[in-house]
Length: 265
Image (tube, rainbow, N blue to C red; front, side, top):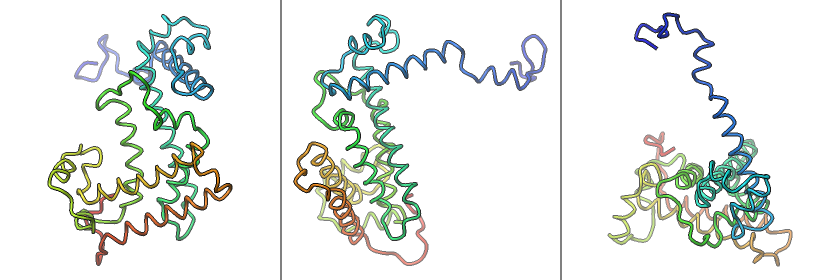
């Protein structure tokens, strides 16, 4: 388009022209559809055989295509695994948000309990996909630094951070009652990326990692069958544990009078 707002051949751009310009081309739409189909086939194989058995050849065979054709969309197994991991984190985060939305009208329940409960249920419903994220690392796979998987983890982690610390000021979090951090640890925590936990003061990062360890540890134990002896009471035990985590953590953060200026939300 020329500076005058007209097309090169002299006609003013219409709404139809603008839509055609913004809309993906037929080739792009076909590629996106094929990519989704490949990811769905990979997820099906993952659910049936587990992460360790994932292979481009098996995925291609299930779709009736050659491995060479699949390479057009995913040049290597690592590219496919990276896309799978990023999508899995996004699906998990969506489930957590759904759980939070569903619990919005429950009075008195910490919002983190709803987020954690949705996280637990998703893991139970999708054990193989959960294993892809948190099980034994796949041999010879390394996630690209600061790539799609890292960004997906941060999007999910932001939900935990928001529901755990929402309403507290940066000053409150910086003064949280935690054991003294070593200078080396504090220095490393202060260098965390600004689009991750780097927005939090070091004491808050330490509290968040402690809470995450307890939450995630309970889910891992249940998904891999180590708490089966509790039977049908596992959900209740989990909720009780997460409530205790939240209450203990919030006791370590001094209350403030008046509005929470500088809220970390």
